[in-house]
Length: 227
Image: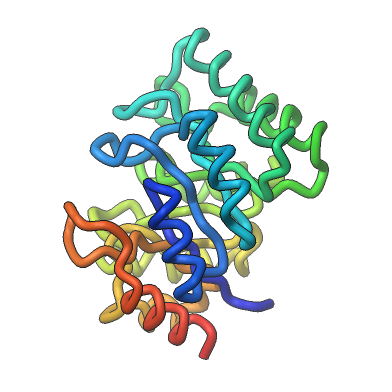
């Protein structure tokens, strides 16, 4: 299976830069200070017009935890269906219950919503995975539900620190769904995840927390991923 580089982008300009520098896929987000929220309709429309590589928008109504009330969840369903109807190749979301376990009922419904529109749509469970109480059971649940990939830092502050769990998930379950390291993935540490068997890498490809996507960083990451 081919390896892929996903770049997290908070603007269409950054997404175009990442695409032109060798990214394979764009995770499209608003709300950078919150760690990523659902992009606006205008943002999504411009991205769809401007990008040729796969784009997976974030479905997250707010920052903070991943336990949502009924109104927030209803908004997530509306946004997810709209994104699927616009023809995006995938969506990204994560929903937990008040015990920090996968909310199976709500995840199942959201998956059905988007795959009822596009059966081939890819679905990523985001870093809500990093706060689940039991990562092994949670990974098995995500497998049964049919998620395409799991974005994770290995339940640590950074993916480098969480490498033991990332390696164990890849080794035990064989990237089904794909284990995608994210959280501090940079040019200087990308190879440790690739050597652990990761098929996808997720990075913001920035030089610091306040800057946008750096083209040289994307090019270097792409070269490593595709070596």
